[in-house]
Amino acid sequence: MEKIGIDVHIRVSGADEETELADPSDIVKQLSGRKAESVADELEADPGIDLSEGYCVIGADTVVSIDGHILGKPEDEADARRMLETLSGRTHQVYTGVSLVIRRPKSGTDHGTSERETVSFHEKTDVVFCEMTDEEIDAYIATGDPMDKAGAYGVQSYAAPFVSAIYGDYYNVMGLPASRLYHELKRRIDYV
Image (cartoon, rainbow, N blue to C red; front, top):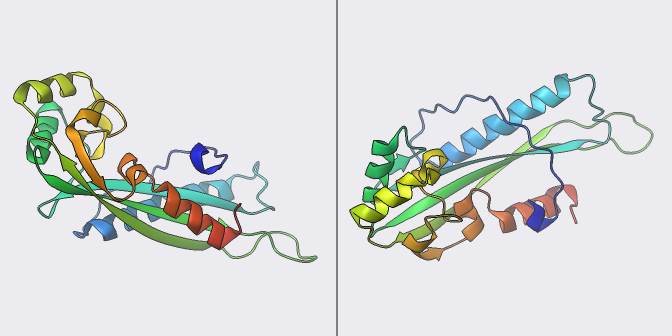
């Protein structure tokens, strides 16, 4: 967010992340929307927060998809190993959904804010993994890095040596498509 000039206040959403959807693009849009709406509801319910100037809540969700299967965060080290073995030497897709919940200040002499609007979009990036040896997988899992990441890897950290190519937005693989977000904010709330 800093890289696109956004000053943020981070709030963790307690939204339900279970879904019956199968298409990765639909999943990430649904879950990012739930997260953003949940935080917006919390903000609006808090009488100690002045929202008269409006607000924009940004929610995001990322999944890894390969062969039509979604790889979420690993349950344990064995699950992380299974995911990394599946990705090894192959191309997979990273989908990130972003939802913006926007409430603008009313114009003129009206006080308060306008109606709330929710906008969702997604980005897809193809990622090519190198072949990983059993020893490399074990060493990577030992770092602990895979345990809280979709697909059991973080491109921005210890998995960097195993990513041979990225086709699309690098920041999308990290979990937030920065360029697309910047342009959506610019278009929708006159950001910049």
